[in-house]
Length: 235
Ligand SMILES: NC(=O)c1ccc[n+]([C@@H]2O[C@H](COP(=O)([O-])OP(=O)(O)OC[C@H]3O[C@@H](n4cnc5c(N)ncnc54)[C@H](OP(=O)(O)O)[C@@H]3O)[C@@H](O)[C@H]2O)c1
Image (cartoon, rainbow, N blue to C red; front, side, top):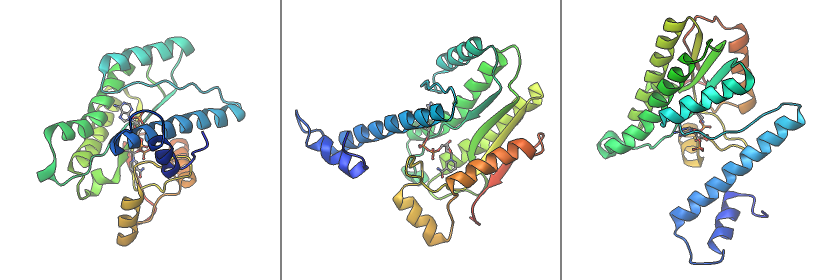
């Protein structure tokens, strides 16, 4: 518990009892602990603000599990007002170095995940007032090593637009530029990627600004708009 940073955690895990695990195992274990701490902290913060937040983990590539979870959440509250779908993974490599399995992980997490979500929402008595899909500027302008991720986020927007056309509900894909990591949440922009963006003059979105931009878009944006791009600077 005393190890707070990733470096301290990795050192503590490496020095732990039992057979010494490999660096990959140590890294995975450290990331899991950090993720669990982030969830606990966020829930405590929300609780202190008076929000009744619940955390539930569902693999969105497991369609049946998604259908079950959405159904149960709706049954528990008797309504579902809004959905933010932000699941995603990156495995950046040039196309020549990508495997079909890796492509499918990156592409499927967004596309099969969103398809499962919309199938689950279709099963409810009424559509939520809004559905926000977290896309990426990579879908709009491309990014080296991210052919799979760019395709996934572009397809995400199409899936959202199709669902909106079918149901008349609001589906908004936000194609984000890169976010600055915060103390509590590192996110997809690691130190190396951050340096690469700085070299290219691409600024990172301040997490508070990004959150406010999304809330402004939901409150005052034109509801028929299916996708927006938010960046802190040119790409
Ligand atoms: N950070 C950025 O600069 C940036 C820029 C553009 C777009 N985005 C988008 O914003 C979203 C959040 O990104 P982030 O930076 O916060 O990255 P992150 O820390 O890696 O978060 C990704 C999240 O997706 C979840 N996830 C992955 N696979 C999943 C699955 N099969 N089922 C359910 N959940 C799954 C992860 O959950 P577990 O940890 O439990 O696996 C994690 O909570 C992503 O969709 C990303 O594409 C981020």
